Structure formats: structure tokens, C-alpha cells
Amino acid sequence: MDDITTQALSLVNQRFGRDTLVSLATFDGARPSVRIVDGYYEDGCFYSVTYALSQKMRHISRCADVAVCGEWFTAHGVGENIGHPRAAENAALAARLRHAFAAWYDNGHTDENDPHTCILRVRLTDGILFSHGTRYDIDFTGGQAKVG
Image (cartoon, rainbow, N blue to C red; front, side, top):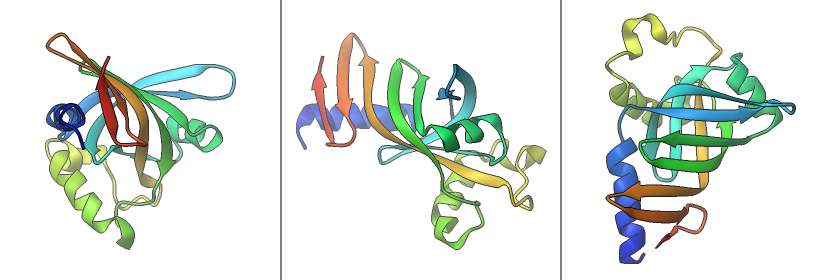
């Protein structure tokens, strides 16, 4: 990995490797919708804990192409419901999400007893990050970044 890619991904981790508000855009086939979600970034993906029957998850089930935006960063990705936080395959990730979202996770906002509670994963494909006057074009699928 070259120095520019390392620097760009380090900046993404610094900004989003914690509970961060990001805009999430979805498409229902007729028009786009955007909303603010609590997001957590890790290894090329954004994660959010949400409700499987929500509008955003219904949109994603029909069209998985999404966009995220926040803190001088915008990106495209593929959204998917990876299951319930208590599912065995999600145990380690769910623990990290509970820690990242600790300020609000257990205040009644999230009900892990509800079978429709789920983890949304957005696998990023490409993005643009700005930092101190520098533009980074990031290809998350190829693990490359360049100064734009």
C-alpha cells in the first residue's frame, strides 16, 4: 500500500472509526431518499444498527446501491442487512458496535429483543475525502487512493 493510500485510509479511520453522524442515501426506484444515521467505519465498510422494516432497509432490499456523506467525505457503496446483532456470526462486530454506540445504544433506542433489529453494512466502493486542502480519490474495492 502506498503512502497516499495509507494516509487517506488513516484519515477515514480517524473521522469515522467511532460513532459519527453520516448521511445515507437510498433509492426506491422512483426517487432518492436521504437520512442521518449513526455510523461506524471499519475496514472499508460503514455499519449502523437499524430496523429491518424501516424505509431505508426496504429501499436497500430493492436497490442495494447507496451513498454516504459526512465530514468532508462522500462515497458510494453497497448496502446489505447482515442480520441481527445477537446472531452468532455477528457477535464480535456487534460488541464493537455496542462499544462505539455506547452513548445511546441502551437508552431505549435499540431493542435487541426485537427480531427485526439488524445491522446494516455499507461496503464502500469509491469515495472522495478532503483534508486540509487535499482531495483524496479512494477506490475501496482495489484498496488504492490518489491525490485528486
